[in-house]
Length: 97
Length: 474
Image (tube, rainbow over all chains, first blue to last red; front, side, top):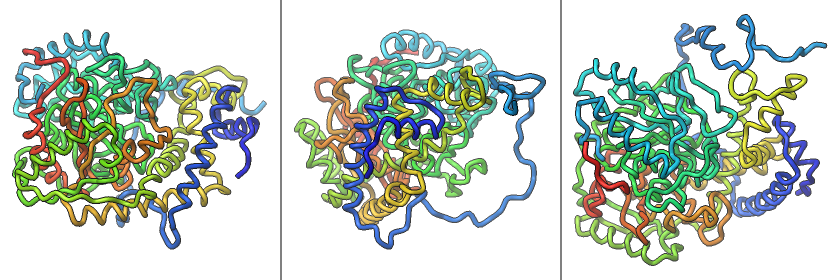
């Protein structure tokens, strides 16, 4: 597996929308080393013809609910936690400049 | 203190807990948000006093959405978040007459096993404040152990109820996946997250399960399985019950005092007529528990928390454009530990890595669960010491790091999350004045059987209703 450079780790972090400082990158480099060891452990287990287990109980949902409006929040409630709002709109910097 | 010891005088109940909580907060640092109870008290006084939780103050882990009460999940990014709705289980508690007492500290977003990674700092162990409470539901465990409240809600993704229960000497119960609705609970990893609670005795755990369990259309993974009368049907006669000791765990524990305590309990169960046998699972397979867990949990967490961006709710940081706002809010809002986990999680979800990491982990999960299920097909429960050590000091805590000594014994309770099987930790004794516990796991939806076996253990240990804070008069 590829070596994890600081640049690569920063790029990974930016893709999920945050930054890492130098120290965090260094710690993460070490943690990726552990990750590789863990991967070795996983590879010891034969999983040929094994399906992924996505949830503990895989009972299929075999019904569709009626198309009724069963739950909706009011506009007032929806706006209660918005950090910056104006006239019922969430305010952010101009997107199209 | 047990639920039944609480009076029908709601004000008196709340007053007692409030007085204790002030002292306890200085000692434990377990509470994130204190709640004004006056409106709740008035509402409960109008309810039927025969309700199962009438006037009982219950502490709530800070990842349950509570309408009008700040809910931070111990993360800076949610420091100003006030939910506009109640989680389903919170509504059920209120309908049963409970008083939401306080919001409790946790590892940020549930990600951790020490409670050291909380925005409000370390939660102290009630038996020795220099030691950890365990996590991620550490604040809830500590408050019940101190005797401040009889019950506290928690969540359990890896062992986040059952490990702090062991370290703090209380009952910690994570029922079957789907038994209690997760709707309105800030997630960690959706395929592993369970709702549960802490109590001081099995009887209260049975009552709590009856209140909290049941299908919820808001949570499509919640079960239609019938909710039983767990408390009424509680029966500690375990004659003929088949109990499997998980040898991989017990053989690796180096502290002989913990092993001796466990063996003493087992002898007593045999005297009661239980059939006890030793079983082991493939050691290599068990060593994959932690890595499989981390790969799946980090990946699911990274995806689940993409909505925490400071735009529609939560703490917003300034930026010149939307992207900068999100990046700045998330960088400052999440601790470094959480951001590192998100990077690991995101990495395993990349298309080029999915097969060798994420999907591989999901496949190994099935292999593990299949082997575990085969054991439980032959036995009523699987049992082992809940932790290989007493609650450690912060510098000695392994958290979720790779520990060669205790890779299995520190992490085997993850089996309950991967399988979804009901799993309960209860106190079994003390070493150096610190509590130790036993973990018992049963078949899916076999909670009654599990509670019955645990009731027998509790009768043998004599630790029903034991708290660090001693007994308090109402």
